[in-house]
Image (tube, rainbow, N blue to C red; front, side, top):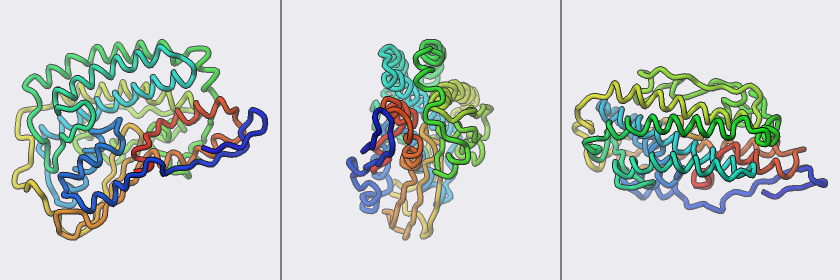
Amino acid sequence: MVLWVDGERIVDAEPHIGYLHRGSEKLCEGELYPQIITLFDRLDYIGNYNMELAICSTVEKIMGITVPDRAEYIRVILCELNRISSHMLFYGTMGLDAGAMTPIMYGFRERERIQNLFEATSGARMMHNYFRIGGLREEPPDDFAERVAGILPALERGIDEGDKLLTYNEVFLARSRDVGVLSGQDALDYGLSGPSLRASGIPDDIRVIEPYSVYDRFDFDIPVGNNGDTWDRYAMRVEEMRQSLRIVRQALEQMRDGPIKATGVRGIPRPPEGEVYFRSETPRGEMGVYLVSDGGDKPYRLKVRPPSFANLQALRPMLQGVYIADAVMILGSLDIVLGEVDR
């Protein structure tokens, strides 16, 4: 960001994007559909499973594939644990932005529990390449359900400990309350989504308003803020972690044995000619995938609507008139990942 300042106050800001551009959308046109999953892993590289779900669900939608229940439940469990893992990193870095060192230790302690489970499931800690069009690459470990159930109490304690440490800390409140305020209408006008939109009082969650996978089978709440300030954007993610735990527990109770991949799906699928749009709720907001198929084994065109790119549109008005030191907190509260901003 290039900032124009008057003393310690920001007069105007001009964001410069494109420094991480890799041409992911164009690369998709030259890759087979199963290969595209690895490209999506590298968009929001803190929410990998959510990225894999987005591209797989898009192709499944245009092909009319019904994914087996067991595969859907495993997907949901992994995606919600991934949401917690992502929010734990956000929690720790927000503490760093405010000058606190301890929260990042708490955050990475809980992330480690989840990353170990991810590694046992997919063989990789981050770039998993585990979801497949029609289901999953392979069965998770035999003790998958027990492993997940085993880490949930520790995660719940970790979320509570982190909450007590930082949320109502006097210095943190002074740095975040009434800083970077964005009204609900402005948030909608700028195209915000996810926790950043809900912090401004808009109860919009795609898992509820337009359910996909098996999210319509779970009972959970949508946390909503009041002021649309930096503190609200932080608090949304803390509460979302608790809701994700609720979803994972319900998924474990409902999950049954069965196949993990739809029958009749080719290893290299060829979707029919046409176009489709699918959107999902990632840790940062609405991840939309627009796919145009010409009937071949590669997309004719693939366009990504990433949440962080849209959320950043509101950065300029939020920065005008604030102190330079507050710019760090405001940017941090949007929780951007540049892999899906620049693509």
